[in-house]
Image (cartoon, rainbow, N blue to C red; front, side, top):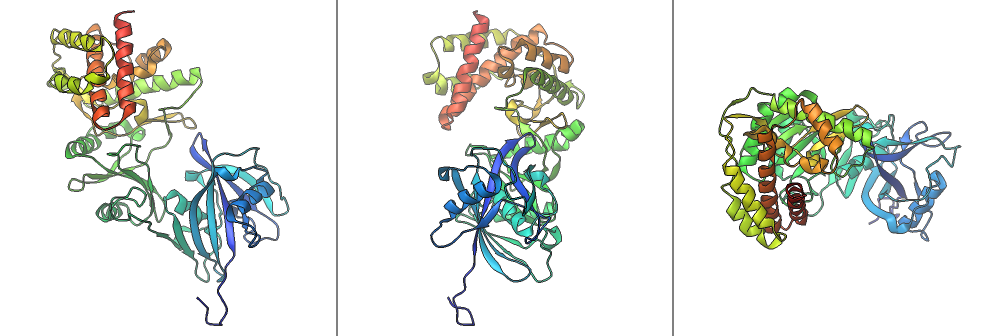
Amino acid sequence: MRNVSGGRHMVPVDVHLLAVRDGERGSEVLLSRRAGGVYASGLWHLPSGHVDGPFEDVVTALVREALEETSLVVDPADVRSAVTVHHRSPAGAARIGAFFEVRRWQGTPQVMEPEVCDGMGWFAFDELPEPMVAYCRAGLDAYRAGARMGVHFQEPGDPVAYDPAFDRLLLIPGPGHGHGSHDAGPDDEVRAFAERAVGRVRGWTDVSWAREESRVWRAHGAEGGEWYVKIHQNQRFHQREVAALRGWVPALGAAAPRLVAADAGLRAVVLTTVGGLPLHGAVHPPEQQRRIFHRIGQLVAAIHTSAPPRPGDATLPLGKLERHLNEARPHLGFGDEEFIRATARRAVALPIPHQVVPTHGDFQLRNLRWDATTDTLYVIDFERSEEGLAVRDFVRLSDAWHGRPDLLEAVMDGYGRSFTPEEEARLTVLSVLDAVSGISYGVSHGDPELVERGRRTLARLRAVQHP
């Protein structure tokens, strides 16, 4: 393709380093501030540079620029393609920017070229500094939206610094857009539903769990703001979560997301976001662990007292045991089935409570988020919420304090009381039933994590019964 002057159109190629690490406020990216007589002096930007010529490929250029600007030593094998942006500046010059994600390196970042850079630091993606080069911000926004390519053509008179009022980023959909692909965001109906609720969405980030039925995206508003858009796997889960969010969840205040919009036909909800990082898999010092578990106890108490107890059926759910046991049997250990049946027989003799309270139903570390900077605990995911026995919410949490009596004590202290003997017995029964159903579900859905969790729970409970 030739331009109107008869010459071949050529543009420079930039490489941009997305050095990403996990921080206390979530994922953080390394940024540097331009200084001196360079373009966009005083604005924050990713460490970046030009490909030097036809002899240098983009990965080699990125590794070189990382070392020259930040002192970080990057192995080319650790470079990951993130997004490509076709950019035009307000002055009319165009270029191609190749953004690369790197999560491993050697060394500590530092300013290596003080004549053109006077600052460098790590910033949470939700707390990017200002002012920032609009071109750089376009690349970051496209990366966070999960896009592979974006066009960022600024108009004459647009500011060089990022300004939401002059957001020119256009994301180019990849294969699968509009056909349920997670990478492309939700389908067109769900997109339209979300935008009716919160306004134009400039990008989507897939934050689903690594399970087939999990469909959750983070929606990035064109004028700022972020929300979660979730599609429930069935109508029952949709109804439960919406009922909880409209009913007792607001009593938790800032500790839980708020419902923005719901559509029963799409089985979709739009929720406000919450802060913090998941407690599942997180490592904290013992003293901080005890403080977190004390807060967990307080949060469970807040859930159970968010509405007055009322008369209701609190019969232990033994009806599906045989079906689950049949599917789980090949994966049980020696003596497990006998233990399960003995536990079920003892459950029949337990007195039946006649009061129920609001329960989360899936209260586990995966659905709890902790923000260390604000000392705040958040709870998410209410699709299994229903009225029931208060002890129900300790079933999946009990694995977390196994072998740590100090954590159990912290939870009970936060909760305001210890379990009664009857609650202890019901907790054992519910834990056994949950383990068997988890193994059954994991087998039928190809989820080895659930199978192993169920086997581990049975081994733990048997050890307590027969030390």
